[in-house]
Image (cartoon, rainbow, N blue to C red; front, top):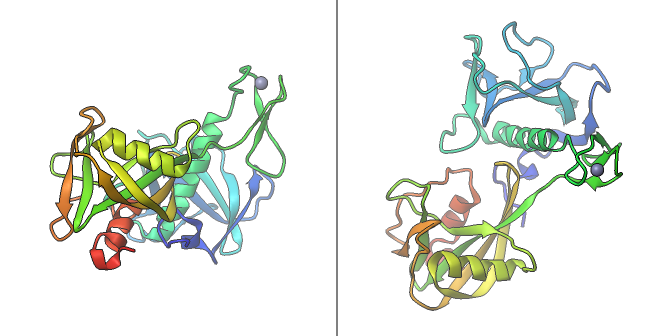
Length: 286
Ligand SMILES: [Zn+2]
């Protein structure tokens, strides 16, 4: 099942057509997704509009050349970045696409996320990680090839599991050391060498909360462009052990009744929230 969550392509299907990267391939006027950190630059007062790329105001200095990533409503969509400390002209503002601020609508957040993921790859793929040589684009895609040693490099997208563990009417929630007191969410973590996704679920729950799980089943996934994860969502049932947080990454862990869940650090755009909303109640679980 593909879910209509921000950052997944389904959110912009119909309006967006991906194309191979194009630098200066055509100068047809189109749209510009201009990023400042994890925010999208939009005109003040019309926060649901992409910037037209032909009328950039004086005072906005781009750090990167606009790079065409596809078509938006049939016209070129380009992405670029400005410095995080750049001051914007008064008629523009930077709206976050990460976190709990949801002034930006889901469509624009999805475009901004895609732009961020691409710009991150572009910034991190200038030199060969094998020999340090210059990388050049392999025509027709996002891959790069080393001029010196010939190694090919492709975008790094990191698989990460996220799992809702249930014991009757209780859900396992954890508090990461980085989250504020009182906020809890689902166990999550990166795939390790030699693991299946199910083994990753088992290990992460064991490491973060000290318990064993069974009946692991996949529910949905989400692109998470912070900077480049693939969140793979699962449900699992408690199988044994006593909840003990690892004390390092996870400072609190426990069972919470499904009718009395604590606040979550994830915004409404996260698959974490979607899993809780969809499967957090016994009637919704399968
Ligand atoms: Zn090389």
